[in-house]
Length: 388
Image (cartoon, rainbow, N blue to C red; front, side, top):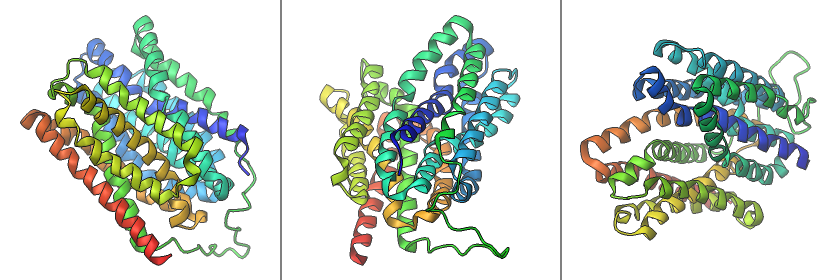
C-alpha cells in the first residue's frame, strides 16, 4: 500500500529535484553570461555533460533501487545534489564548471522521476500507477516555482548565492525520501541464502522492450529540444509575444496531468501512451501557422505540453503492463540510458537547424522524433494486444 503521506513526500521531492537541479541552468544561465563573461555554449555544455553522466549510471541506479529500494538511493542523491550545486556556485572557470556537472548528473539520476517511479513500484506495484501520476503533477510545477525563486534570489544577491541557496534546499530535501520504507518490500525478490545470485524473473517480450525504448528515446529528444528552443522557435515563426505563448506549454502539461490524476484510471497505460504520442505530431502540425494565428500558436504550445505531460505518466506506468515489476528499475534504467544521451545532443541539432534554415527546417527536424514516437506507441499497443 502506498500511503498519501508517502506520495506527498515524493511529490515534494520531485518539485525540489527538478526545480533546484534540472532547471537551475535555465534560470541562472543568462546571469552567469552577464556576470562571468562565459559563453552560453560553455554554460550549457555543463548540462550536456550531466545528461551524459545520467545515461552512464542509469542502468546501475535502476538496478540498485530494485535491490535496496529508493530510500537510500534518493536520500544519497539529494545530498550529492546539494554538494554539486554548492561546488558549482564556487566555480571560477568553465573547466571547473564542466567537471562539476557530471556529479550533478549522477545526483539527478538518483532523485528524478526514473528513480522515484522505481521506488514506488518496489513498495506496491498495484498502487504505483496512481501515485506516479500524482508525483508528476507536482514535478510539473517545478520550473514555475523555482525559476521565480531563483530569479529573485539572483537579482538580489547574485547567481552564486542563489545557487548556494538551491544547494541548501536540496540538502533539506534529503529528508523527504525517508518516508519510503527502510525494510525490503514484500514485492522485492527474496535474497539468496546460499551465496548464489537470486534468479531474476523474465524481463518481458523483446519486441516490447525495443518499441518502448524507441518511444522513450523519441519523446525525450523532442522534449529536450523544445525545452531549449521553444521561445527562439516561436520568434522564428513570427510571434510577437513568444514568452507568453511558450508559457502555455507548462500549463498544458500540468492540466493534462491533473486530468489524468482525476480520470485516468479508465485509460489503460498503453492507450495513454498512444494518446500522448498522437498529440505530439498533431500539435506540431499547427506550428507553421503560429505566426498568423494565435489559436494555432496556442495549440502548438498548450497541446504539445499536454502530450509531454501525459507521456511522462505513461513512461512511468506502461512498464507495469510490459515487464515484471520486480525488475522495473533495472529495465527502465537500461532503456533510459540512450534517452539521456540523445537528449544531450538534441538542443545542439535543433540550434543548428534554426541557424541554417530557420524555423521551417527546425520544425522538419522536430517532426522526425514526433512521428517516430507515435509510430512506436502504435506498434507497441498493437503488438501487446496481439499477444493478449
